[in-house]
Image (tube, rainbow, N blue to C red; front, side, top):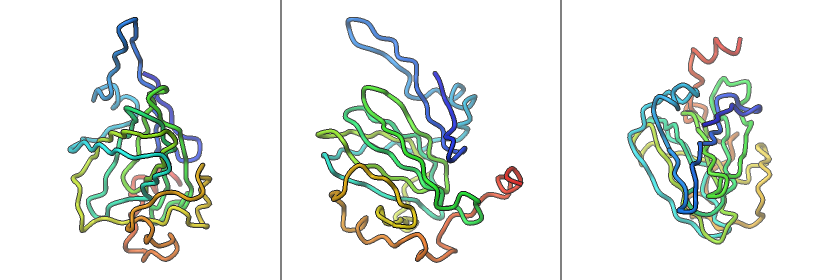
Length: 193
Protein backbone atom coordinates (compact mmCIF):
# COMPACT_ATOMS: atom_id res chain seq x y z
CA UNK A 1 0.00 0.00 0.00
CA UNK A 2 1.18 3.50 -0.86
CA UNK A 3 -0.31 6.59 0.76
CA UNK A 4 0.51 10.27 0.36
CA UNK A 5 -0.80 13.58 1.59
CA UNK A 6 -2.26 16.11 -0.80
CA UNK A 7 0.04 19.07 -1.51
CA UNK A 8 -2.91 21.49 -1.32
CA UNK A 9 -4.54 20.10 1.86
CA UNK A 10 -2.11 18.03 3.90
CA UNK A 11 -4.87 16.44 6.02
CA UNK A 12 -6.30 14.78 2.91
CA UNK A 13 -4.65 11.41 2.20
CA UNK A 14 -4.72 9.48 -1.07
CA UNK A 15 -4.26 5.71 -0.81
CA UNK A 16 -3.17 3.31 -3.51
CA UNK A 17 -3.70 -0.23 -2.20
CA UNK A 18 -1.57 -3.18 -3.21
CA UNK A 19 -3.40 -5.23 -5.83
CA UNK A 20 -2.64 -8.93 -6.27
CA UNK A 21 -3.90 -10.16 -9.61
CA UNK A 22 -3.64 -13.19 -11.87
CA UNK A 23 -5.72 -14.84 -14.60
CA UNK A 24 -8.60 -15.34 -12.13
CA UNK A 25 -8.95 -11.65 -11.25
CA UNK A 26 -7.50 -9.68 -8.35
CA UNK A 27 -7.51 -9.23 -4.58
CA UNK A 28 -6.88 -6.14 -2.48
CA UNK A 29 -7.47 -4.93 1.05
CA UNK A 30 -9.87 -2.00 1.04
CA UNK A 31 -9.11 -1.28 4.70
CA UNK A 32 -6.77 -2.68 7.33
CA UNK A 33 -6.74 -0.66 10.54
CA UNK A 34 -3.05 -0.92 11.47
CA UNK A 35 -1.75 -0.19 7.96
CA UNK A 36 -4.09 2.74 7.49
CA UNK A 37 -3.25 4.02 10.97
CA UNK A 38 0.46 3.94 10.03
CA UNK A 39 -0.44 6.01 6.94
CA UNK A 40 -2.08 8.74 9.04
CA UNK A 41 -5.70 7.54 8.90
CA UNK A 42 -6.25 7.07 12.63
CA UNK A 43 -10.02 7.13 13.03
CA UNK A 44 -12.62 4.56 14.00
CA UNK A 45 -15.14 3.94 11.25
CA UNK A 46 -18.71 3.11 12.36
CA UNK A 47 -20.76 3.07 9.15
CA UNK A 48 -20.29 2.03 5.51
CA UNK A 49 -22.36 3.60 2.70
CA UNK A 50 -22.82 2.57 -0.92
CA UNK A 51 -23.93 5.08 -3.54
CA UNK A 52 -25.02 4.27 -7.10
CA UNK A 53 -25.15 7.11 -9.64
CA UNK A 54 -25.37 7.65 -13.39
CA UNK A 55 -23.12 9.73 -15.66
CA UNK A 56 -23.38 13.45 -14.96
CA UNK A 57 -24.70 13.10 -11.41
CA UNK A 58 -23.02 15.39 -8.89
CA UNK A 59 -23.40 14.72 -5.16
CA UNK A 60 -22.23 17.34 -2.70
CA UNK A 61 -20.67 19.32 -1.29
CA UNK A 62 -21.73 17.66 1.99
CA UNK A 63 -20.66 17.83 5.63
CA UNK A 64 -22.18 17.24 9.07
CA UNK A 65 -22.07 19.51 12.13
CA UNK A 66 -22.17 18.37 14.83
CA UNK A 67 -21.45 14.67 14.32
CA UNK A 68 -18.64 15.48 11.89
CA UNK A 69 -17.64 12.57 9.68
CA UNK A 70 -14.26 11.55 8.38
CA UNK A 71 -14.67 9.38 5.27
CA UNK A 72 -12.61 6.85 3.35
CA UNK A 73 -13.96 6.85 -0.21
CA UNK A 74 -13.35 4.47 -3.11
CA UNK A 75 -15.05 3.40 -6.31
CA UNK A 76 -15.86 -0.26 -6.84
CA UNK A 77 -17.31 0.23 -10.34
CA UNK A 78 -16.98 3.20 -12.69
CA UNK A 79 -15.12 6.49 -12.33
CA UNK A 80 -15.67 9.72 -10.39
CA UNK A 81 -14.10 13.14 -9.97
CA UNK A 82 -13.86 13.48 -6.18
CA UNK A 83 -13.50 16.83 -4.37
CA UNK A 84 -12.60 17.74 -0.77
CA UNK A 85 -12.93 21.34 0.52
CA UNK A 86 -11.51 22.81 3.74
CA UNK A 87 -14.43 24.62 5.40
CA UNK A 88 -13.00 24.76 8.94
CA UNK A 89 -13.30 28.10 10.76
CA UNK A 90 -9.83 29.37 11.56
CA UNK A 91 -8.05 27.34 8.88
CA UNK A 92 -5.50 29.25 6.79
CA UNK A 93 -6.64 27.03 3.88
CA UNK A 94 -10.33 27.87 4.34
CA UNK A 95 -12.09 27.46 0.99
CA UNK A 96 -9.19 25.57 -0.65
CA UNK A 97 -9.98 22.29 -2.38
CA UNK A 98 -8.30 19.21 -3.76
CA UNK A 99 -9.56 16.73 -6.34
CA UNK A 100 -8.66 13.24 -7.45
CA UNK A 101 -10.09 10.80 -9.98
CA UNK A 102 -11.14 7.54 -8.32
CA UNK A 103 -11.98 4.55 -10.48
CA UNK A 104 -12.31 0.80 -10.55
CA UNK A 105 -9.12 0.82 -12.67
CA UNK A 106 -6.82 2.88 -10.43
CA UNK A 107 -8.42 1.53 -7.20
CA UNK A 108 -7.34 4.66 -5.33
CA UNK A 109 -9.04 5.85 -2.18
CA UNK A 110 -9.27 9.30 -0.64
CA UNK A 111 -9.42 10.06 3.06
CA UNK A 112 -11.70 13.02 3.82
CA UNK A 113 -10.97 14.34 7.32
CA UNK A 114 -13.75 15.48 9.65
CA UNK A 115 -14.49 19.16 9.15
CA UNK A 116 -14.11 19.08 5.37
CA UNK A 117 -16.89 19.18 2.76
CA UNK A 118 -16.99 16.36 0.22
CA UNK A 119 -18.57 15.80 -3.16
CA UNK A 120 -18.12 13.97 -6.44
CA UNK A 121 -19.42 13.79 -9.99
CA UNK A 122 -19.70 10.67 -12.11
CA UNK A 123 -17.53 10.44 -15.24
CA UNK A 124 -18.45 6.90 -16.34
CA UNK A 125 -21.81 5.52 -17.50
CA UNK A 126 -22.55 4.48 -13.89
CA UNK A 127 -20.56 4.41 -10.65
CA UNK A 128 -20.74 2.54 -7.37
CA UNK A 129 -19.04 4.52 -4.62
CA UNK A 130 -18.35 2.88 -1.27
CA UNK A 131 -17.28 4.94 1.71
CA UNK A 132 -16.59 4.42 5.37
CA UNK A 133 -17.71 7.06 7.90
CA UNK A 134 -16.35 7.85 11.37
CA UNK A 135 -19.75 8.92 12.74
CA UNK A 136 -23.31 7.89 12.04
CA UNK A 137 -25.50 9.69 9.53
CA UNK A 138 -27.38 12.45 11.34
CA UNK A 139 -30.10 14.21 9.28
CA UNK A 140 -30.31 17.14 11.72
CA UNK A 141 -26.53 17.67 11.34
CA UNK A 142 -26.53 17.83 7.54
CA UNK A 143 -24.89 20.80 5.89
CA UNK A 144 -23.67 21.66 2.45
CA UNK A 145 -21.99 24.16 0.18
CA UNK A 146 -23.20 24.87 -3.34
CA UNK A 147 -21.15 22.84 -5.83
CA UNK A 148 -20.73 25.83 -8.17
CA UNK A 149 -19.75 28.40 -5.51
CA UNK A 150 -17.62 30.97 -7.41
CA UNK A 151 -15.52 31.61 -4.27
CA UNK A 152 -14.36 27.98 -4.41
CA UNK A 153 -13.94 27.97 -8.20
CA UNK A 154 -13.84 24.17 -8.38
CA UNK A 155 -12.84 22.97 -11.84
CA UNK A 156 -15.58 20.36 -12.23
CA UNK A 157 -15.29 18.34 -15.47
CA UNK A 158 -19.03 18.80 -16.17
CA UNK A 159 -20.95 22.03 -16.70
CA UNK A 160 -24.58 21.00 -16.19
CA UNK A 161 -24.73 18.19 -13.60
CA UNK A 162 -27.75 16.25 -12.41
CA UNK A 163 -28.40 17.40 -8.82
CA UNK A 164 -30.79 16.57 -6.03
CA UNK A 165 -33.08 19.43 -5.02
CA UNK A 166 -31.20 19.66 -1.72
CA UNK A 167 -27.76 19.88 -3.36
CA UNK A 168 -29.01 22.52 -5.83
CA UNK A 169 -30.27 24.68 -2.95
CA UNK A 170 -27.14 24.71 -0.77
CA UNK A 171 -25.74 28.20 -0.04
CA UNK A 172 -22.42 29.70 -1.04
CA UNK A 173 -19.70 29.23 1.58
CA UNK A 174 -19.70 32.97 2.43
CA UNK A 175 -23.44 32.78 3.22
CA UNK A 176 -23.19 29.96 5.77
CA UNK A 177 -23.35 31.32 9.35
CA UNK A 178 -19.93 30.92 10.95
CA UNK A 179 -21.36 28.82 13.81
CA UNK A 180 -22.68 26.33 11.19
CA UNK A 181 -19.13 25.58 10.00
CA UNK A 182 -16.69 23.15 11.63
CA UNK A 183 -13.99 24.63 13.87
CA UNK A 184 -10.30 23.99 13.23
CA UNK A 185 -9.18 21.79 16.17
CA UNK A 186 -6.84 23.52 18.63
CA UNK A 187 -4.16 20.88 18.01
CA UNK A 188 -4.25 21.69 14.29
CA UNK A 189 -4.01 25.41 15.06
CA UNK A 190 -0.81 24.73 17.00
CA UNK A 191 0.56 22.63 14.12
CA UNK A 192 0.04 25.51 11.70
CA UNK A 193 1.81 28.11 13.83
